[in-house]
Length: 419
RNA sequence: GUGGCCGUAGCUCAAUGGUAGAGCUCCAGAUUGUGGUUCUGGCUGUUGCGGGUUCGAGUCCCGUCGGUCACCCCA
Image (tube, rainbow, N blue to C red):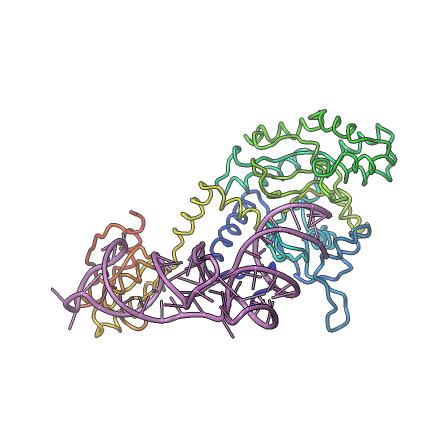
């Protein structure tokens, strides 16, 4: 039996890499005062149909089925609708701004390729109930720090920053009817991928040409970005950001700042993307709650690729994984008649919080040392003829001392600190 | 949904249409209380699966499943 296409097994080595990413995400988000939430994996299809009345494509990429009660349900393909529902229902319980993050599993039925699977993990960070450049900057800074935390610098990645509102102002100034905004933005999103002829055909009803769009994009950085850039400059993070009006994002619901995080070589798809969506919560809650919001998502698959392809980040991860070896202390029972004392020692170490292990079947001393080495233990404790004393060997230095078993835990504590 | 490339041992890969191999890993040993190196030995295959061509197919052809990359889309 093979696993389903686009779905991954996580044997311990892979699980450790996944947890490294999740743990890093969590610790950085919490540094920014974001608190963790989660929602159900299975949702009503209606939740997604509502938001995407125009986009049938999204419904096709839904893992959907009827449950035994005849309800149309779907595995969640994204977090935002769930988040909007949760916030709309409870927003009066929380002081604003609401700063929430989650890292959850999502499902999309689509053909897999580099950086894209059918089941993936995505970090979602959203700041709700606050508008303005300060809130935008806070979210952007979090996005930047989330990538920096893996060892990447400004030479490795860049945040491309744009603004839906700048686009709308431009279109309004050109007299483009509102009904055509969506078409124009979609064309702008594809300006580098699609042929000018094809794009011009799409733009004609709006009275625009590819050259018009290019001229707007080339007009550079509107003054509206200045307060946001100043906020980032004060944090020392402006070097990670470039204004790039060609960033549009496919989603219709963005109302302000939008951004995508790319590796500098731009050899892979976006590491993260998001923006301001001030009307979505009101729309999804039928007006029950009217809250502005700014947020983004970051997937584990592209990030893991990026780490793997960047030596310094890969080394950083390897070091973090090595520091979290399966076992701290391996107890070697050198004399089978001392097995009871060995077990007592193992238990005492485990009670004291050490990751301790030993040979269940018993083995030659040399084998037990090999096992200790293989499990990444820092210390080997030899239980044998010296009882009630034991020998403690620091494996990295090969130094060995003999201490009373009763003082073992204390000795290890100071011994670990001196490593 | 469309297309290119690829499927051989647990892993990385060899093998002109002619007896399926190597390295690594793993397991066991090298005067029975001391590990990483070294040496010796050993295990492991429905060559993804199903058909076809051929005296003979890992190799050629068709199908299928899976992987990968691109398109589509990107929440």
